[in-house]
Image (cartoon, rainbow, N blue to C red; front, side, top):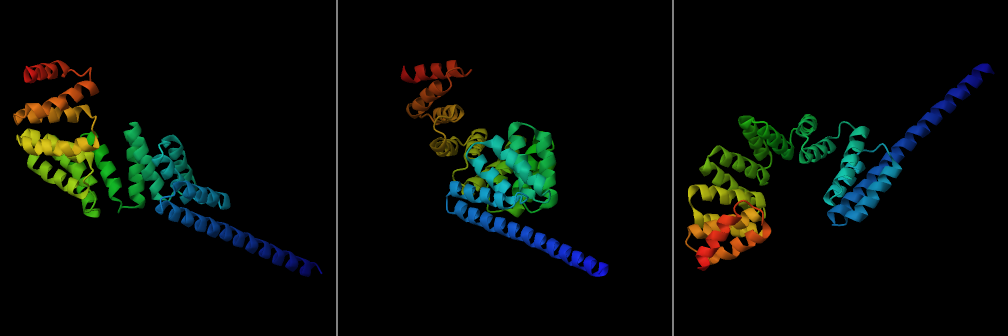
Length: 283
């Protein structure tokens, strides 16, 4: 009888453990299905619906990391970056092998000015996934800020090789070339960035700077016209546009831009010079 009782207990424990495992699998499967519905809603342009599905996924399985990361990305796009960062940290705490939250958190830290933390997180992301171009771009920006120009250039080129149809790496390497004084390379790279993304404000602005250095003022004002269509109140863009048009001896066209510059930046150190130039043009 004693032997039979022991066997019954063992069988009961095995059944109980099996049921527990089945329950865990069911919870994860449900969470994955809900997360996938959230992804579909997000792709369809319904972030609020996506958030509901992601939160239901967490309710189904609180240990599932992906929905935390996805919620964070939506919150970041909505401008709630502190809560987004919390979500990324939650994702990492649940699955340290998921690379995306490390990278998302790295961008957040970089934006806040914590470059050391951003670099650590970025390197962790790259250990988990060596094929993400944006990680190399970010690490390149951090490295460039630290003065590692050659290493930064190498990182940008790695990103370009991984994502040749994306403009970010071309912009970053073009900007670096401009800072090095290699205006020919800068013009080529920045033009490629603009070709890949016609609304790349950074590439358009830096391209205008390259043309100002090479004395191609017609190309400069053309780039600035496209830039100001996207950033119409940017003081620097307005000032450069006015200056470029003056170089082209088109003072009447320059005046409106310089007046807008005065409105946009009344305390700028160049205000007296601009006022003098306007008086000369109007006199």
